[in-house]
Length: 274
Image 1: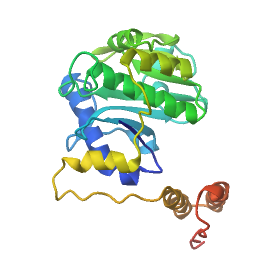
Image 2: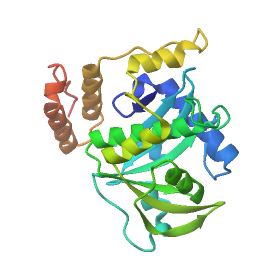
Image 3: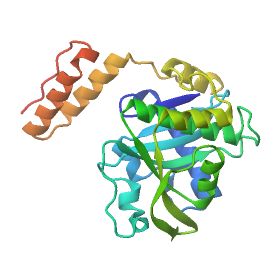
């Protein structure tokens, strides 16, 4: 099952995010030997602080077995700020309809080969399909991903080949990195689903995801309460207002609250002191 954790619902999934960061540490530091920052067994970088969307796959045991990070290209992102040499001097992509996909990984130790539901191939395809479906609903037309030649072959074999590449492949530490472009279209999603035999909705509700995640966890692990989506939106708007430092920022926060008012309760925004 797939869940998408973003700024609006991350307060529900802190334990899930912790397991995702631990999976990233096992994959990127332990298995691939990347030069990443790992603290307390978790791989977290500066881009995780920018409120990206994390596409996370849970298996039937409730374990995090796959993930991907989606980040808008209008602000800081890895291709612009870390892997810019790939672009051969060309400016980085900057578009609200183009998102960057990074930190893709699967739990190869737990998952098997073949194409079963518990296979590397299936989980890879489920994360990809979920990411593209989520992106399309958000109005995204294309995704750019920094990948290596091995991942490029995986994408080609799984009916998910990039339609183009930016710049040229460059050595990056122990791997060769390349920037791949993929369109977010129903045709791509259907091709991925057909390859893996995925049918039906891949997304789980928050309730179902948390029930699955905590089912086999220790009894003393407290399950986080499900918050009504309207309450979550209201809380997000209030946080934006409370953290505003200038009148302009407070005005922007109020404008956001008014824009979202049809979706949330009619509770007033709490004024902070000038």
